[in-house]
Length: 206
Image 1 (cartoon, rainbow, N blue to C red):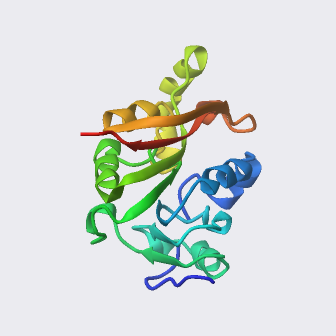
Image 2 (cartoon, rainbow, N blue to C red):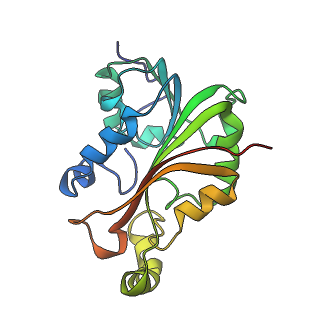
């Protein structure tokens, strides 16, 4: 079953289909999505839609849907029900504690307020829900220094992408505990965005 796109068309910042293909990210996306279950919330242009299988439905939140044409085709070809909300996280009207899984792929590097975003996502997850993520991350040593130097121009060239952000620390500080974490290098990508992480986090007990 495919889904519907009630409010225009949708493609994200750096994470376009070309970006995924050139840098070998498709297998990483497939692995991330394989862990999704139940009702899923995904942010951005829906590059993971083709990989969903055993989930109830996928809700995509994309505030700039009218300027992203590729998502329409992705939604139509999806193997699971998909719906798109053309709105920012603060304006979706989504019900608290209504999602089993939240999927983030290369989102925390671009959002202006990663902690506010994570707090909002945490409120939308059910008590036993999971946050699955695939993100750029701050590297160490020489790579970290290069990220610091490149960050200013990188943000302006790639729609606000901060290559020097520590996504793992942000997730933990937002009140999640990480149950699975895999650090790896996107070897064919530019050095500032080569360090990456893939993992699963859950809501920390009160």
